[in-house]
Image 1 (cartoon, helix red, strand yellow):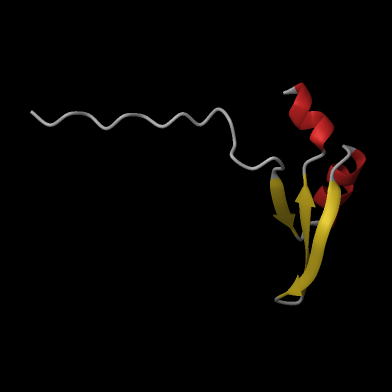
Image 2 (spheres, rainbow, N blue to C red; image 1 turned 30 degrees about the vertical axis):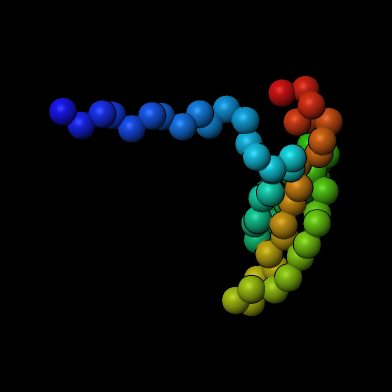
Length: 62
């Protein structure tokens, strides 16, 4: 019998900050209001794509 592969725990992310990328202006505004900060922005395919990092305060509370 083959042993089942051990399931990987997905509870703790390895990165300290969650990264989000979006070109949706409405979503950008919502993320900024929630305390996310833009770490990068660049035009891709005619749209401005924003890269967000999750605020550390939210990570510490989680």
